[in-house]
Amino acid sequence: MDYFYEHYVTLILTAIYVGGCLYVGWYFKKKASQGVEGYYVAKREIPGWVISLAFFSTSASTNTYIGQAGKSFEYGLSWAWMGIIWTVFCIISWQLLGPKMRFQTARLRSFTIPDYFHLRYKSNLAKSIRVLSAVIILFATLWYMIGIAKGCAHVLTAVLDIPYEYGAFGIIFITCAYTIWGGMYSVLWTDAIQGIIMFGVAILMLAIPFIFVGG
Image (cartoon, rainbow, N blue to C red; front, side):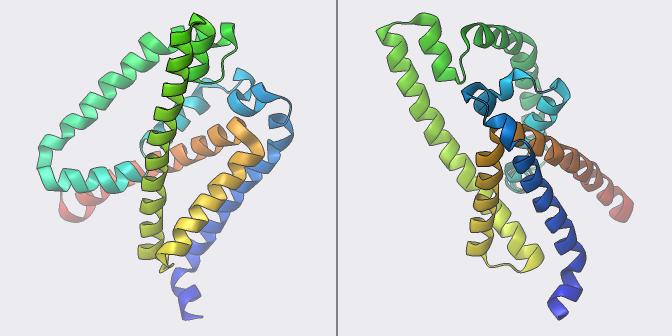
């Protein structure tokens, strides 16, 4: 009982968030099951503001709040250059490359970047690039997801005293559940919810040092 009394606020908020993610996955289950395009690219009908928030939350995950915070503490103010570099490349991606890629992928009806290379160039080299791209994406995503699961498990251990193994398993299980149910619909909408929460937390984290220690 002492545990629940000490952590009841965090437990309630966590339960609401997890329940919301699972509900979103279940809600979009029917739409995601209406063909391959619905499952993998949400029929290309997701609003731009949802995609932008999803992009923000995907980029600024535990990698940012834990990993980047640790690096900034290690290297000092010079690490702020990383934020400038990310901003520049995000502008290039969204303003220069994004619109053209969006038009081409819709025209070719490709679902992934490897699909795009294969459908656009239709050559033996394109097939090789397709396989190579798939391998690179799979390899990079695997390590990225491991980092996120590891970071979240450490947070659950520090905040709620949940054993590391249980925390990591829970994060992976919940993420896989709503992703399998709702496909890209649930991925983007849950990421958008995460983006709103993380944006508010980022502002709070910036304000707290000024409030309590004067900057």
